[in-house]
Image (cartoon, rainbow, N blue to C red; front, side, top):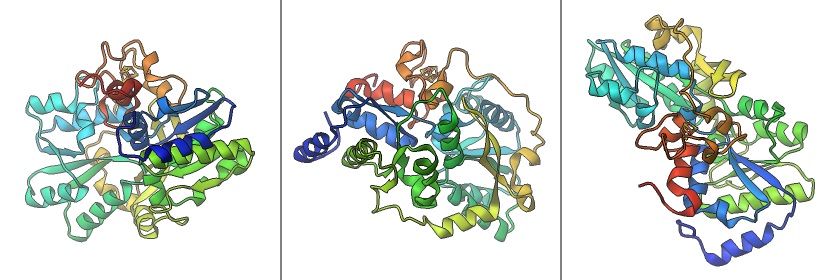
Amino acid sequence: MLKLKLNKITVKKLLKGINNESHIRIMEVCGTHTMAIAKAGIKQLLPANIELISGPGCPVCVTAQEDIERILILAKKREVIITTFGDMLRVPGSTGSLQEMQAQGADVRIVYSPLDAVNLARNNPEKEIVFLAVGFETTTPTVAFALEDAHKTGVDNFSIVCMHKLVIPALKALLSDQETEIHGFLLPGHVSTIIGTIPYEFIPREYQRACVVSGFEPGDILESILFISRQLENADYKVENQYKRGVKTEGNKIALEIMDKYFTPFNSLWRGMGEIKDSGLRLRPEYVQYDAIFKFGLQDTLVQLAPSGCICGNILKGILKPEECALFSKMCTPAFPVGPCMVSSEGACAASYYYAGGEVIGR
Ligand code: SF4
């Protein structure tokens, strides 16, 4: 069943160790984990009492609808070139997607690094280059370095739509939500390379939940589930670091410093979760000239409703599963997505669609 190479004996050994008989709900809060779990068929390997649920770990999926609407307005401006990572292209807004606007003549380009967008600005001084800055702590430092480059070299036709989110406030919101039943967290390996493990200590201390920072190979994930199961069985709640080869306790100081130089937390809107205190990042006032929303006067764009029938919000909180959406694999497929959880390569709906039952379907 595993699609990735993993020694059968190791799998058996790990599964044998998971002998906690209680019903355990474990949430992953990283889109890469969501895809890795689905691709490797890990849910199908686990005992029936262990339930894996996807949380708000896909950055495109949690981006608020009003941000999508603002981006579509920006893309209509003749002087603007929108630069973005690929996933944002097909997220539906009320008037279509960026991809549809591209087909109608809007200048929308995929870049592989925010620095590519700064270079584009440098080479096109008559244009305004707007980079769609989406992602958690993993991607924010790269955007901060691009801002540093633009600032130091005087590139003033570069700006960003800042939609960065922070993982810790989202975890706090989930743990405070009475509707969400979570016994343990598979903590995001990539984000943790930046923030380290210390910021998670409130989880066992204040909420008595198990948590393990996990790597991304199937063996990493199974081992992390085993660690969570043991913590719960022994009521020995702590932050364990299974991904020691990538994550240091203190995180990455250089990345944290440059993030702090350019960004400051604010109360941010999350799809399905509403406004969460200090959960987003915006540019510090001294760098507001790089904020595309201010530059183009889009602060007052009306909030638009999420696509009709889409339950992404409840999926991101772990309350419902993709298969419980009436549109799943009927009206909503990766080719014709209705909501962002089906668009993103890290979305829970896309993961379920492609790898349901451990088999690849829908290709
Ligand atoms: S299947 Fe489509 S419409 Fe349903 S929740 Fe997922 S993204 Fe939204």
